[in-house]
Image 1 (cartoon, rainbow over the protein chains, first blue to last red):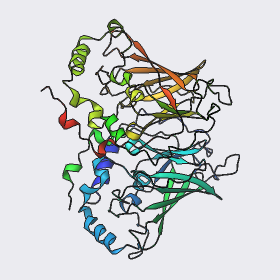
Image 2 (cartoon, chains in turn blue, purple; image 1 turned 180 degrees about the vertical axis):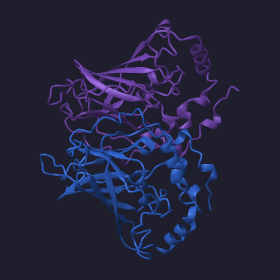
Image 3 (cartoon, rainbow over the protein chains, first blue to last red; image 1 turned 90 degrees about the vertical axis):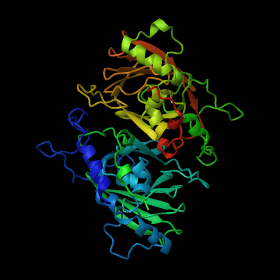
Image 4 (spheres, each protein chain N blue to C red; image 1 turned 60 degrees about the horizontal axis):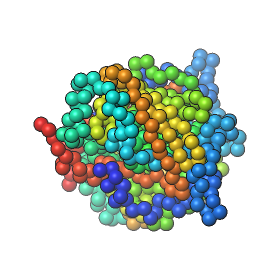
Length: 254
Length: 249
């Protein structure tokens, strides 16, 4: 059951004809091998300021959507007792209907881990993430502003970013407590502070080191590393969850 | 509906007191919205900013036109009359939290933000927290596009006007709340002209031979919003309207 949504979503994706969306347009600026293929192990591109360029269309390793702790050993996630109890009540699809995403509401941090690509664009004063999933976006402000003090609870929260060496570090707060960390149902509280470290290793590979700092739900901060690959020579498609969402009525709730 | 959703958002915490940089101001610190329109380094107009639509055009894109200017095919006229009379309100896509489509999303009563980047522009819409990409890299419109709500958009400069052409629509969107229909043959041309620092015109041409006997053009007039940010807008969160809406059949 817990994989049901991914499966349905994959079917949806597969049903989109792939003939017409500028798929044949080569992405400019991509290093290529002699036969014209993208060389995804070429060095990380850098801007005039020497910082890595993150712009491009990226796709996350799909396993983290299902299980954000996929690479952790049993017992390593430092649940508070009530958090573990809530998580257990949602496991194996037992609470699928309670996942906001089942009602076509995306949220952080699952948005980053959707099985659809997203595009990073670096603009003056902010970094934009355009998500094929839900055709939605995040704004990460890089103009030096502080995080809001008493943010209105939001599904995506409020994000500011800065460079630390080669890492683009994004701090996010103000995420309402109803979003899930993964499809398995790991909870968080309204005290969640997310720290994402975007690190582009080479032309085609990036990590997001994601720290969950949520003292109300976990006994200490914990960190996972999610891996992404660059998707060249393509574009984002349109994804409209509300258009034909057939899952919800089949999902169960506690 | 959308307006009600906006009004229920608390406005105390979204960086609303952050000053927008590079805004000309009068001596008392107020933005001077009649200062000249800014330019990019390459001399092209800089449309960057948060723009607030005039909601008259959300209700009826043809509000400033004469009836004869919008010449509908008989089927389209029949549909339009029922929609305009409120008999199909439950079918309006955004009543069902489906995208408003182009050009209606330009008139959505909530703001949107233009960002100009090399090779593409982006419009971030507070409405439904959605976006459009406008490719400026010289590519052509797709020849046989997969039908979508927001279409495929390319742009070029014509003097001081950004001309955005879009195709690939699914024919399900309403052009406005009155219910001017569209079909998959819809082509939309939007000419964005920043007249001065705080005022924009969008000349919107609806070219849809599936619904209209000739193209028709309306001019919208968004105004710049400074010292603010887009809020989050999640239609599916608490949609309470549709059960109160009328169904004809």
